[in-house]
Image (cartoon, rainbow, N blue to C red; front, side, top):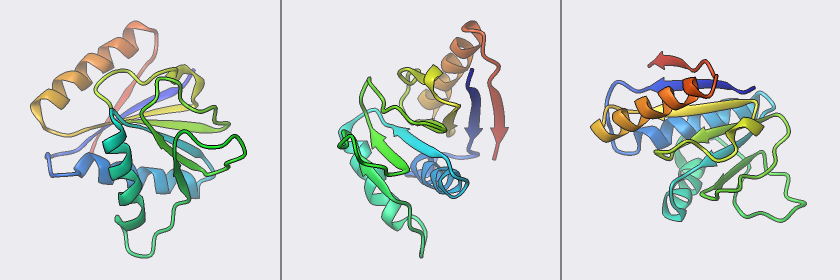
Length: 142
């Protein structure tokens, strides 16, 4: 059963959720985890791909856009598919407004919330849905 954490930003800065996703991905990667960044669209997947190269001076996070060849061992994968990659020791970072697909296969689910009204409403819905499915999500205000 995955651990589910909601990280709540205090504002709604442009790309704030995406930048936090980059920071959390870097931390997970440096801790030996594999990460799947689940986005709502190919366009946002490309934006995250670009941000992972530039979000912090001197940072390097090996990553790839999905779908990837079966022999690709990139520790951070980015995609918008309803069929996320199989990851041993994996974390899914959900940037979509819906429950991430097949989230039960991951060790951890990370939800990133900002103060944009629709994002807040949808995140509350997801929090409730996780609880209804027997999970105990945690909330962390940043």
